[in-house]
Amino acid sequence: MDKETLSVYCHVVEAMTIHLYTKAASWDNSDCRRRYYPDFDKDVLISSNEYLSAFENVTYDLFEFGILKPIDRMCAYFLCGPEEFHSRVEQNWEKGSSYDEQLKYFVGLFGEFGTESWGLDFTPGKSFVPVDELLRAFDSLSGAGYVQSLNGSYTWTEKMRPYMFWHGHWPESAETDYEQWVLAVEAERLKSPF
Image (tube, rainbow, N blue to C red; front, side, top):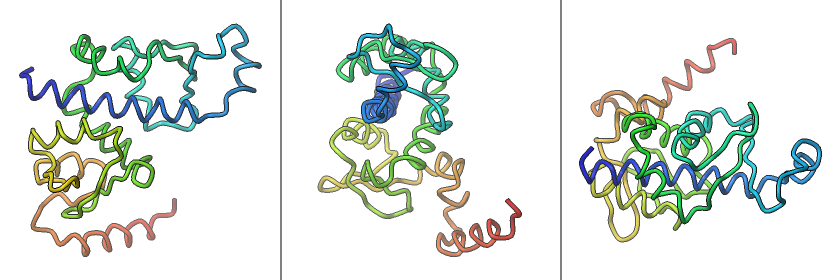
């Protein structure tokens, strides 16, 4: 993997890991910890993947990168803090999912759990300002042409279309009118019995 690609890979994974870490830190796990993990030091951050399917693939890679260690089927604990996330991914990236998969996970994870709290917008052509914790990832994505940066804000580029399409954020083709596409998708959803 060349240097620019590795940089994007590491920064994207780092951003997703910060997302998971922040979610775990805000989780009130004192009762869960007492009941299920009484032997863990109270300062060890435990992450639960219950109801967090968008995090599952990311979590498996974090085991391989030496960032998380599984406790059981539902929970894991962090082996390090945010200051070490990037270096651990960089040292172990070959054990993780592919570059394309990581970009899919990134769009899926932040598209489902991140628009408001992380300052992102997945609308084509609409600019957004991510929170400080994600700036390294977006600077790296900008350098690789996935976003355009202008005065501290970012806009997704066409290079991101396959990943956006994969998760249903954008139509497959740039020729498709976005507003018409949104209306058609919504109409199909309303027809569904689920």
